[in-house]
Length: 215
Image (cartoon, rainbow, N blue to C red; front, side, top):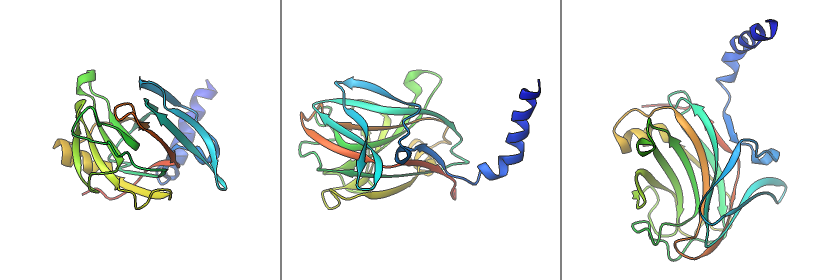
């Protein structure tokens, strides 16, 4: 009985502290893949922890393959509306064409997923590194109209360099879908080349959900 009383007490005592801290969803620099699971769509992208300079990161290698790595979370976007991450790619995909299924590949993607009552009501925002679309562009996924892609990085100007990103996914969701977002259900990364029959390597740094200003 004591054990069941202690947990609520701890939560109450430290609630003010924990709410001020970013949620490290992808703690790759600590060599931690706990809770991350693969989801294959067409072949298997290889995901592993690897050294990049003096730090540990998540490395993704895709050759004619499409699979993601995801982690289930349960977070209120009102409390944690910011998504922060870093990434690096070795090149963009020359045959990328986000308007067609035959070109729906990106060197790097980061997803936020909002589960619905039924699978067809599930919605997602995918932040992509595009070789062709302009930064800030939004486009529907050709496979699923409930999945909207937003170009967080574009072109080859930053290829081979670590790039830090921050998006207010709460505001992105409201702008795209015209409604308040439900609870966030998962975060995912994906590097895929199955449609373009290409080959690419990407690296992902830690992924955070953070507090921020909502307007």
